[in-house]
Image 1 (spheres, rainbow, N blue to C red):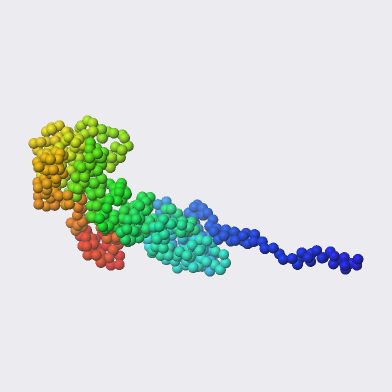
Image 2 (spheres, rainbow, N blue to C red):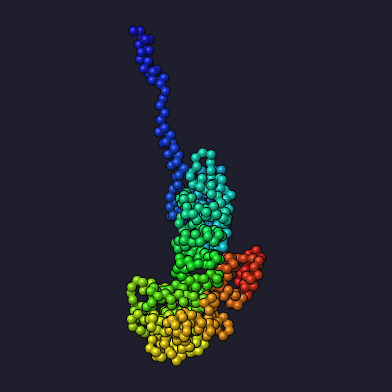
Length: 549
C-alpha cells in the first residue's frame, strides 16, 4: 500500500463521523437560562450597619462625598440618625440634596447608579413620613426623595442584563407617586397578595414599612366606596386586616362603622360590634368618650343599640331563671332598647365570684356596668334607666317588676352593696317608694298577656314607647343611644375635640409645640364650619399653609 493510500485509510473513519448529523442537546441552553435567572434575581450584598453609621456621621460633619462607596452607603443610610436621638439625612434638606446631587454624578453608569437607586428605594420605604410624630421637614424631604425616584426611574436599566428588582421598579413606578397603593387594591380585596409579596421581596420592603400599613387603609377606603352588598361581603376581611394592625385599626374602624350605618336596615353585625367594643369599650360610658369620638353619632348609636340588645340577651339567658326556656321577658325588653338610657347589672355572690370561664367572660363584657348584690346563690338584678323611670327586673321568675321615679328619691344607690329584703336599707325592692310593681303573669286586670299590660303602663305613665327614646319633663332625655352631633362651637378647645374635628373633616395635624413651635391644622378655608370652630378655638389662618395657634 502506498503512503497516500495508507493516509486515506486512516482518515476515512473521521470523514464518516464528520458527515453525520449532530444530535440536538438542550442541556447547555438550560444552564444558560439558569445562570441568567440567577443573575437577574441577585440581590445586593448585605450592608453592615457599622459601615453605614460611620459614613453617615462622616458626611454629616463634612458634607462631602469622597467616592462611589460613600454615595452607595449614604443611599442606604438616609434613615439612620447621625447620633443617638439625632436627626437623619432625610430630616435635613441641605444634606439630603447633596447626597442626591452626589449620586447623580453616576447617572451615566447604569450599573453603578442603580446600586445607589436601590438604596434610595429602601430608604424611601423605610422612613415613616406619614406617622403623626414625623417632623414637617422629614415629610417634605421624603416627598422630595419620592419625586427624585420617579424622575430617575428609567435610568436604572442598561442595555444588557438587568436584575429582577429593576423590572419591579420600572413596572411599578407609581410607587413613587402620591397614590402608591392604587393598582393593587382590587387583587388584595379578593385575597390575592401574590403581586405585593413579590414586590416586597424584590424592593426590600419590610413588614414595618408605611407602604404595607397604607395598603391596609387603602383597602378599607376602597371597600367603603362599593355598593352595600359588596361592602358587606368584604366586612370579615376588613375586620381581619384591622385586627392585625394596631396602628391603623382605629382609623379603619371609624371608616367601616360610618359606612355600615348607611346600609339600609343596619342589621346587627356581630363581628363588627364585638371588635369595636373590644377595642374602644362600651360606647355609652363617659370614660370611653375619646375612643368613640371619631365616629358619626349615627354609627355610635347603632353600636350602642347592638350592645344593649346583647347585654339584655346575656342577662335573661345566662343570669335569669327563665333562660332559653322562656324568652318572653328578654324579647319584651329588647323592643325597648332605644328607650333605655343606661343599664346596670347587680350580681349576686355566685355570679360575682365564679371563676368559670363563661362567667369571667360575662363579667368582662359587662365591665363598667356592674354593681354588687348582697344576696346568696343565683340572685341577680337588671337595672334600667328610661327617662324618668328606673326599672328593675330580677333573675327569679317569682319576683315582680319594680319601677321608681328618677325625678324623686330612688331608694337605692348602685355604688353601694344592694339588697333584696323588701323595704330594707339600699334594697331594690321598696314597695312604698315604687311607682310600679307588676307581675309577669297573663290574665291580670283583664290583660290577656302581661306584655300588653307592661307596654300600656309604660306608655301611659311615662310616655315610653319601644320605637323612641323616653321623654322626661316634656324634653327628650339625654340618651347615649341618640348621641347628639358634636357642636364644636359650644365646646372649649381640647386635644380630643381637635382630634374629633380632624376625624370628621379629614385634615392633618402637625404639632410642633414640643420643639417650641406651633400647633398646625393643615387645611384651607373652604369649610365654613371648620373655619368657625378653629377661630373659636383661637387658631389663625395662614394662606397656603393652614391654621396655627
